[in-house]
Length: 293
Image (cartoon, rainbow, N blue to C red):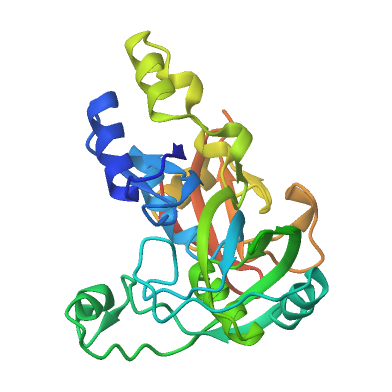
């Protein structure tokens, strides 16, 4: 889906449930309400695939406004202090961008869904209570300055799952000594799901009313395209459907022939329907942890 501004990720799921008349719908990766863009929805059996997308790579484009930091680290919050004078160059911003690229520890924003002693951090922050969140390891694969004009920098970033772009904007403002907040954000990709594939809620509604919602769906067989496929038949298929471990005797049976055992295998039957996803255990042993019955 192409999430609109002002909607929570759960709002989009709820609307899709009403449109499609299906209760079992989830999503792969929360987007803040003010953000827009790619929000993959999972339907039926596909909801079980969320576990494989928790740490997947995500891409964003957004805007950072310098001169004012906020308590939420974005444009929805209250200023944390008086506005500061902004006297920056694009080169200075790019220098800080380079410093923040790579694997690093990042502290989540106080207004986040992280839990502190069992309570959501944003609930404590709203009550003006102390929020002590531990840094988590994230990775910034690429951080590019697209333009800088009138105190606003437009940027593109590719990062690991769990990265808070709001925290990134806040940290950039701190390093440049003038404060900053995230003024706008659009997610352009989540793993293999792209902006070009996305549909608005209005488009989904129109397709459903025309009986054509199926054309917007991505089949299970297209998920996890980075992992090889293993075709099974007869007794092999029956064994895997029962959740039995198996030994991958011939790497040549895999599509792509990886140099080392892949962490996951997509198991297809003779009709090329996805029947399971198996995890690597050790050596050539795999266990079908997710079985589609």
